[in-house]
Image (cartoon, rainbow, N blue to C red; front, side, top):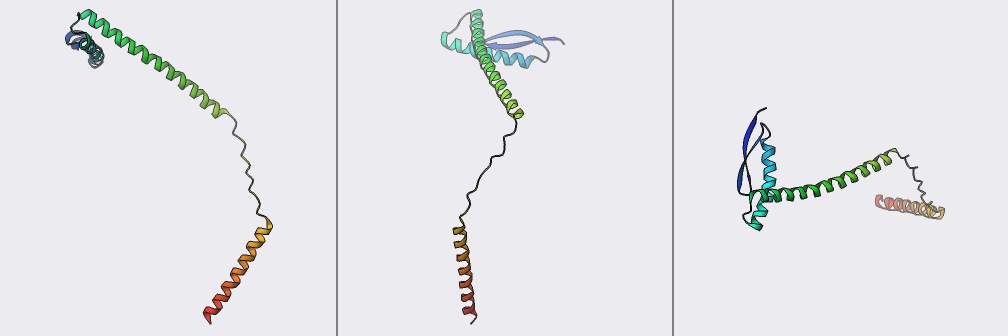
Length: 133
């Protein structure tokens, strides 16, 4: 692959940087991150020497990167713990089925319901006979 020159803008300045063909988008993306930090510096401090601006912007990016790497390590640790928990749950024996006892309806209630049903049927027959007559 051949080297190509790319113009990048950082802190209101233009720099020519060489990169491999096909890597321009990555270079522009990285330059945009550095430019965002440089713009903060320019807004806060005003015009500063190029070397100092690049150094401070790079340090600000490095600080953000270090914070993100720490969060990533924490997330990876949590993910590893959750995976271990899932594996433990998968390999654990299945729990015994829970036995549920349903209370028995007392026979007096069953007998009373049977009596009520018989009376209802008897009344229904009487009403039916009167309606036919």
